[in-house]
Picture 1 (cartoon, rainbow, N blue to C red):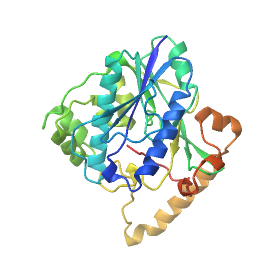
Picture 2: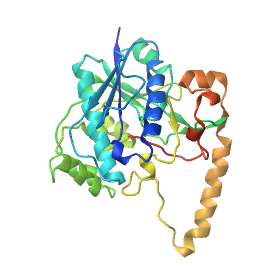
Picture 3: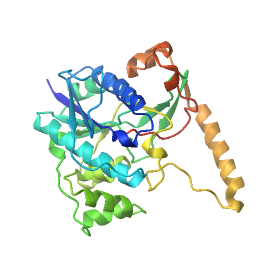
Length: 310
C-alpha cells in the first residue's frame, strides 16, 4: 500500500494572538487528514513548540520541533519560516518511506477522498486542487473558489522523487527568481535562515505547477475540491508585509470609488459561489457540528478570500 505523508507547519507560539485557538485549528486540520482513506496516511507537524494537541501519542502523527529563531510578525519572515518547516517535514516524510508528500496549511481541512486518489492511480507526478472552499467555523455556508489557470492552491501532492533540497545562495539565480515581483525581502529572510529548503515549496503554491512544467512534469487536477480554507482573523495572509499579505494598501483618493465598485463586484461573484453546508460536505471535510465548536471560535465574515495558519 502506498504511503502518503501530509506535512503542515505551525507558527511560533509567540506570534499567535491566541495560542489555544491555533492548536484547536490544528487539531481539526489533523483530524481531517487522518480521516482520508485509500492509502497509508501519516501526518507530520513541524513547529517551534510542540503544542498540547489531542493527537499527541498517535502513531500516525509526528510532531517535529525545529531549532531556529522565531520570525518577526511580518508576512515575509513568517512565510520564510513556513517554507523551512514544510521542507523539513517533507524531508522527514521521504526518509520515513512516504511515496508521496502532500503539503497543507495547519488550519485547512482536507477532503477524505484525497488519499484514495493517491492510492488508486498510477505513479503520477502528483496532484493539485483546482478549486477550494472557504469557510468560517460555525457558519452554514461555504464559498467555492476556482483557481486561476496554471495555479495551485496550498493543497498539493508531489511524488517523493521529485523533491530535492538545498540552501538558497545569496545572489544566485534561485535567489533572484525568489526575489522577483517585489519579494526581495522574503528572499532575504529565507537566505538569512541558512536552512535547507525545497525549491518548489520556496517559490510558493501559485508557482508549484509552473516550476514542474518547466521540467516537463505535470501535476494532475484532483477531480474534486481538495480542501476547505478556514477563514479567521489571525491568518498569516492577514499580517502586513510582502506579496503574500492580503492586507490591502490604502487607495488613493481618486481611486476609492473604483475600489468600492470592485469590492461590490467581488461580493456579488462570491454570493453566486455559495454552497450550503450539507451533511455530506461536513463528512467529506470533517467539519465539526456547530454545537461542537466553542462559541469563541465561531467566525463571522467567511467570504474572506485568504487564510493561512503556518
